Length: 186
Image 1 (cartoon, helix red, strand yellow):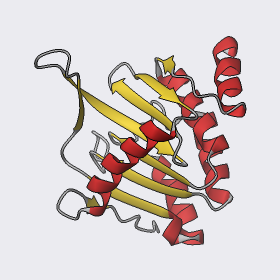
Image 2 (cartoon, rainbow, N blue to C red):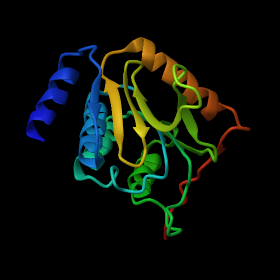
Image 3 (tube, one colour):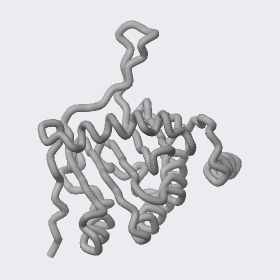
Image 4 (cartoon, one colour):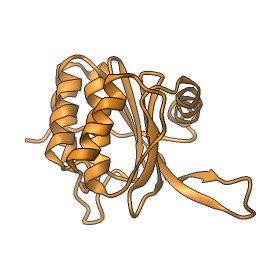
């Protein structure tokens, strides 16, 4: 893990336009934490439901809090607002706190339909995906949402622009997604 951590840190620090790969929740959390550390403006996340396998990792949570604490903007699209047990994700507590500080910097929406990546070179081959894109150049695309396998890049504006277009098309269209309200708990 230390070798992978140094590799990811180097790619991000030196703004390298190199595709990297990851698998498993620990690697996913590390990559997401690196995105939060290096993002300066906006992070867009399309995910299942923040079940916690990635989002409960301490490094993920602390770097997200740091990003939001510096005034970063977060836009989130979730497939489901609640966890399978009917409770809301623990990460909502962090989002709720920072939305009180600046509600304009955190937007959450729900989309019932999944997003798929289609391999045009193979007939009938499509994969459900989750993805994150930040600052018009960084991204992570999870092409196996069960095993958390993904690919990404810390400096690919062209691919990031494409992912932002997909995300914003869903996020902005009120027929494709609906708001999630972070209700204050008593």
